[in-house]
Length: 391
Image (cartoon, rainbow, N blue to C red; front, top):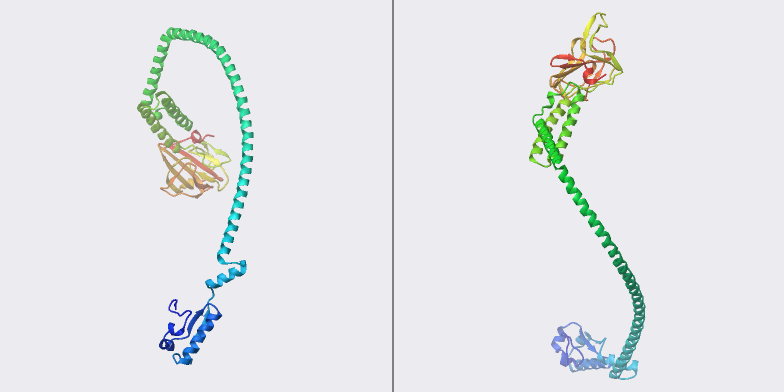
């Protein structure tokens, strides 16, 4: 008998499992192909029980199970389906498959031939269109070539005429150059002399030697330096000499910009009108003639007061008849005073910028009404503020 994975299969018990092993084993499982073989196994089992080789207790632990699948069952199933043997059935199936494959291939080949035929017809039509287009283009190209040959002949004649004109013009230019050579030489020498004069002037430039006391002259000087730098760059180009001259101009221009920022030409308050000018006047309290050292600008109480130029605050507080006042040192010998204030916003030692709000107007000190008393001091001497801030 044949065993599978240590378990008994079809056959006699005495040849498969020893009685001693069956006594200690659990339920013994045997497999049979059909009922006939299952009955044969059971009969053999009880014969062993009758002979005393196997106890009834052990025999009751044995059961026979029919195989789920076997070669014999497959053959019998095929025989039932086709009514013939397995080999004949397989041959019939293969023949049917071959016939189907041939039929499918024939259909596919026929379909491919039809598509190829349609494609060839389309290609033929496209070829005809392309051929007609090329024929038309070739004819047009021949016409263009003929027109070009005619045009070339005409242009050759025109070029000859132009060549003669060019030669005449060249001769005339040479004649003019020869005629005016001396004049051109004199003009070149004059330009070189003018350029040298400009270079010498810039090298010796000290813009503040000719600057007047009005800010308009300073703005004009700043524009002139920018214009001079543009001329230098256009005449001398990107050269070391041009760089040196422009650097000198930039230094002068920077000095002018600093001077302008510290020049007291910013109107200090949004006033209504000048109520008392600089110079001699009748004192409003005593009625006697007295020198007025500043400019009184009438304004509303609490109007913003702005610095007339950049500088450093040197006084900020109450000062006699001035009341609350601020004194700013602008450098370059200039100082400005703002008096009769109602409130001061800066402190001594603080740096302020031109146009920065420093206080509010009022009528503190010796004043008959709300206004701003504004003074300009140059090198210790009061000046007419109108010379700087205008009327």
